[in-house]
Length: 171
Image (cartoon, rainbow, N blue to C red; front, side, top):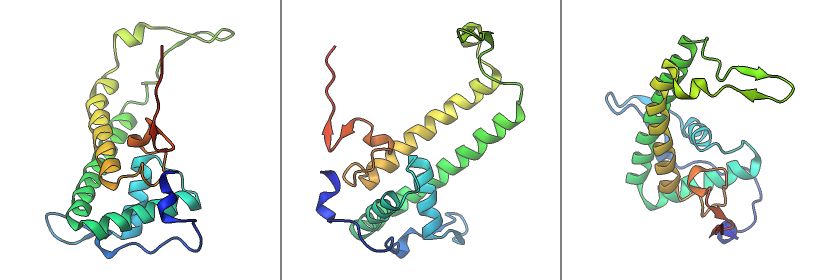
């Protein structure tokens, strides 16, 4: 089992290493507390807010901080960029409330028109590169924290792993 090296999970969620408190790179002022950074990590990695997941994420964060403060700083940088992209995407989507997706043709069969797929909306065209960059940052964060070792299967770099082993599909 992937997270077996840490033993069973008992007790409160571990306190986070002080290195996880994020500061503004330009001014040096505090930007996020360690707990807020954990919440951003959880959100970016699409990890649920359950006790076991928060415990494992906290352990992964503390392990990374113990091994390399430079990696912590790099992950914090990725998180700041991810959060900025998230704000841009939300602003673009809220600016165009008419972009409702595919138009419904038949309700009893649920058939959608493929016409909008040929001609993407302006919002989709604007958000696609931002979403792709966000996905790249999510994988970089996941790999930097080595989340597949901590048995957090929701994380994007863990999608191809099942109990620590790569899945093989035959066609």
